[in-house]
Amino acid sequence: MNPRTATALAVACGLGCLDFDQFQPGRDAGADLLDSTAPDRPEPTDSFDASAEPPPPDAPPLDRVADRPAACQPGRALVTQLRVAHMAPQVGPIDLCMQKRGTTPTTSMARFQTPSWPSDGLDYGEVSQSVPLNQRVVLTNEAWDVAVVARGTPCDRVPADVAPLATRSIQLDPSTLRLVVITAEPALDGHLVPFINLLPDELCTDCMYPAVDVRAVHASIGAASQRLTFTMLPQGAPPPTSVAAMQTFATGVSYGGDQGYACNQLWGSLVAGRVNAPVQFEVSTAAGRLVARSETLSLKVSILTQLRTATVFFEGEYNEDGVPGPYEPGFVVCYDGLATGTLSNCERVAAQSAAPDAGVDPPAGDASNDDAPVIDVLPAVDDLDGHAP
Image 1 (cartoon, one colour):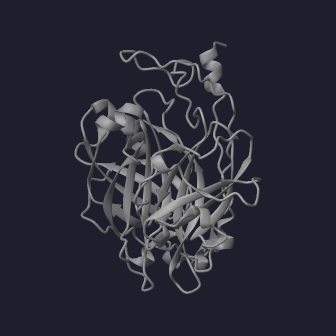
Image 2 (cartoon, helix red, strand yellow; image 1 turned 90 degrees about the vertical axis):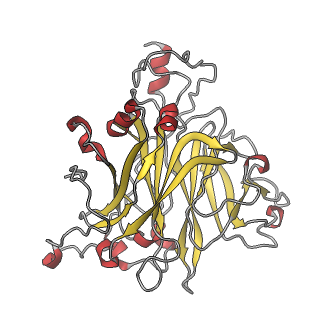
C-alpha cells in the first residue's frame, strides 16, 4: 500500500455530544417520541502527515481515496482548531472563554484567540473562522472548559465573579477540527439561554471531483422536537437523473446536531457547471411534512469549487403563540475552509415556515393524520422528486 493510500485510510472523525433531553425544561413533549440514540461514529486518529505536499495547481482531478491530495485529511489539522457558530436567537453578540482543565484553581479563563475572534463579538447567525485554541492540545481526550458570555465580558472574571450564559466541559484530541454550535434553550421563565453543542468539522474534502462534501446542522428551536430532512432544490433545468436523488442531502438530523459530511454528486454537478446556481433549501419532518422553505439563493459556485466543502444550518425560532418570532427561520450556507476576516465565508437566506402544526408529527399509532398533506408555504417549484422515499 502506498503512503498516500495509507494516509487516506487512516482518516476518521468523532462526535462530541450531550444527553440533550436532560437540559430542556421547555421542550415539546413530542420530543419523547424520538429515538435519541446518537449515530455511531469512528474515533479520530492521530496519523496526520504534516510533511505531505499538495498537488500542483494544474493537477487533474484526483480519486477519493488512493489518489487524493495527501495534504487534505478531512477533520485533521496541524493543531486542534475550533470554529464557532452562533445560532441562539435573543442572546445577542457573544464571546467565548476557555480554559484547559487540570490547571491550577488560580488560573483564569481566557478569551478565545483574541487576534482571530471578532472584536465586537460573534453575532446571531455568524460563524467564526476555524482557529487554534489558546493552548496546544497534546493529550487524547484532553479536557477543556468553554463558556459563552455576553460581548465584552472579561473572561478572567468567569466564573468566579461573572456567571457565564452557558458553560460546558469538552474533550479534544490533538490535530482535530471541531465546530461549536451555540443553540438556544428555553429557561423556566420562558426566555432563551444559550446551549453549547460540539460537532466534528472539516475544511477540505477527499471526495472524488467534482462531488461536494456537504452536511446539515439543525439549529432551529422552532423545530427542536423534530428530526429534520434537508433538501436542496435546483431551480431552472432539472438536474441529471443520475444525481436527482441526491437533492435530499441529510436525514434524521436532531436539534443541535448533524449526521456528518457526505459526498454529494448533485452539488458536484453545480461545481462542474462553473456558474452560480439558483437553488432553494427546505426542511421537512420524518413524516414528510414541510417545516420551511427558503427563498431562492444563488450558490457561489466559484467559491464552492475551491475546497468543495459546505455546511448548511437551519435556524430560527417560534414565539409563545406558536408563530415565527423576531428571528424568523432561515438557512446559513457556509463554504467551509474559506474565511473573510474573522468569519467563515457564509451567506444567509430567509425562509418561510409552514403553519405551526405542520411541524409536529402525530403521535405514534395515531392514524387520524396519516394522510395529512405536505403544506407548501411558498410558490410551488418544479417537482424534482427531491424527497427521499
